[in-house]
Structure formats: structure tokens, C-alpha cells
Image (cartoon, rainbow, N blue to C red; front, side):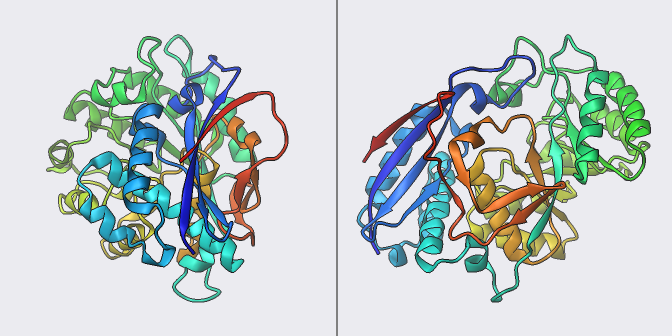
Length: 389
């Protein structure tokens, strides 16, 4: 079976919300694509939307396809070797979206779900994945107390926990800009709210806080950690800028109970190893839109040996989310993943048969491939552009 052509889609919502901070791709739209084959079987891929502007992602996808993918037989594509060969960081990450599309093709051709193809032992897959609700965003002119009802809602829905974030400045809404120049936030207000939150949800519900690299120094991070660990938080995510040196300083001579999570930015196994060898985090949060399945399996195996918990970053749109669920299902061990509850608007544009969210869990269904396709229903809420290559 040969790859014949590529169709790139750009999907936009017509009507946008501005009442709460939302992911950048909600306002800017996102790219996904279709790989077509000589057997008239196609697969869908979804690049990480934070790799750059849509036009940049589109151009680099096209370049990679023409140079390395077009007219190749699927069984001749060695993406692990290709990723090592490529030097450009964005291109390395885009290779993974081609892989999910190829596995989607293979699954449809064999009439098997991707999780079964990935599983090391036949029939050894996990049918349900625990989820924590990832939301909790407000602008700086609102009170954290307005988030209490959201946390209770997702507890009642059966999710294993809920994650919230510092208030978003009205003047700095760009994710990439905040990572480079993290805006300050009032840590005392977060701790005070967290105390109310814990009393509201009780002791049997996991709570997490995604700092988004916004602590301005080590002392701020320590103060936040000490405040939240007394409230039995499950973990906090990325308290400091993404620097191994920063986290080594944080861990040095600092006794803590609260777990530190990071890893959504890992784009290859070597990057993961660099952080692992620094021994400066507790929870690994990888994502299949930056890592190949084989890299994810290596990370999973090493994490287990090193006593690091694996909790998937799972933030984007249906193709990527199904890819993450497929991999976790293939591990046949009890897993937990993030689930973005801020917006599911883009789901309306897709027919999803590979998974179903029920009672706070992802139920894996017996659908060939990834079980995600473009919906045939007309929907006036979206604008979609396509380009055939």
C-alpha cells in the first residue's frame, strides 16, 4: 500500500467565546490532515497546534510529505530513523502526526483499533482510562471562587480529579508568550482559594494546579508547593520556566510531599532522558502529538523503573486525543490522562467512534483505526479550508 497524496485542512470556528481564557487554537483554528493511499484507505493526523502559526505548520507539513512520505510504501516508512535524521525541531514533532495517520490507515485496512495494533500481547488492552478534568481558567478581573462550582460539577460527573490554573492577564493571552515571559500571579490568593476548594470537594477528590511556568523564582515555587501540599494536592505542573537548572535548584535540599509534573514539551526520547537524569520531577506528562509511539513506550518503561508516574498530557482535538487513548489502552495497565473540559466545540465537526467519555472515564470502543473521521453533517458554525498536495 503506497501513500499517494496529502490533504491539509484548516478548521476555524465562526463565533468565538471571550468569557474565559481558552486554548490558542480555539481562536486561531487548527490544522489536521488526511493521508491517502493507493488502496483508497486514508488516515487522519493532527499536528501539535503550539508548534507555530498555521501557515508555518502547513508549509513544513507539505515539505516533509514531498521529501519523505509521498509515493512511499507504508511498510517502507521507518519513522523512528527519519525522526533521528531530521534536525529541525518542528519537523521532528510533525513526524508524529504522520505516524498517527499511518496507524489509522493500518487499523482501517486490518479492521482493528490502533490500540490492538500497538499492544504487545494480543487481546491485552485496557478498555477504560481514568480521566481528570482539566479546566479552571479565569481572567484576572474575576474571583477564584467562581471556579468552585466547576470543580464540584466534574466531581459529580465521575472524573478522578480537577485541575485549575492561575488567573490569566487580560493583556497577555498567548500561550507561547507566557512561556517565554511568564506573568506574575498572587500565590496567597491561590492557596486561600485552594483551602476553600478542598473543603468543598472533600478529601476523596484529586486536585491539581497547572502553574504554567509562572513562579518568578525558586522561593516563590517553594512557598506555593508548601501551601498546596498541606491541602493534599495530587500534583502541580510546571512551577518554573522549562530549564533543567531551575528544577535542579528547586529539588536541591528541599523536602516536599507534593509531586511535580512536567513533560508536555518533550519532543524526543533524548529530551526526556536529559530531564530524567537531572532527577527533578516526579510525574511524566508526554503527548503523542510530539512523540512517536515507540518513544512513548520507552518513556513508559523507563518511568516505571524509575518510579515516575505517567499521566498523559491530553489537551488538543479529537484525532490527537484518540491517538493518546489508543496508546494508553495498549499498555494494559491502569492509566490516567488529562481531559480538556474547557471546550469541545471542534468535536461537532468530527464523527467519533473510537472512544466515548462516560462517568469520568474514556471508554475505548472497537472501531477500526483511530475511530475519528470528518462528520458528513453540515455545520454552519465552522469554516474549513482544504489544500490537496
